Length: 115
Image 1 (cartoon, rainbow, N blue to C red):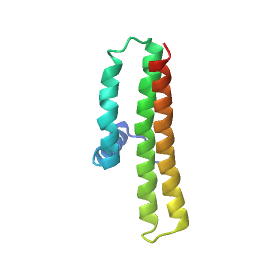
Image 2: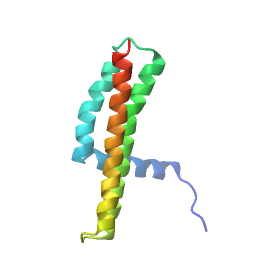
Image 3: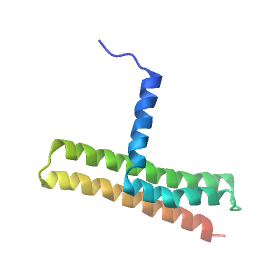
Image 4: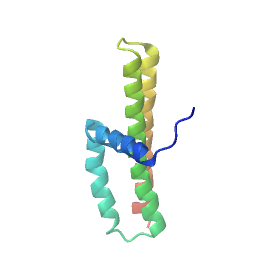
């Protein structure tokens, strides 16, 4: 029989995952830069659309970092030994984080320097 959906249990699982992410060094470093940039957005004279796109690009970095951490955790669960496929999975997930950082830099650059 299929389990019933429980909003409170699922919210607990989500907050548990967020708590784990807050302990991850990479996530902490990204927050160190992203939080001040989100605050800065309030003071910039840009359109609401520009601000929302810029904020979204920063939030996307955190989302991709969360998925990267999940991939790394699953790979670590599956094998303790070095394997080319484990390395490839971790490297590709890390590349996704890098790409999200690049797209955020491009979006911020376009919006800040194309007056």
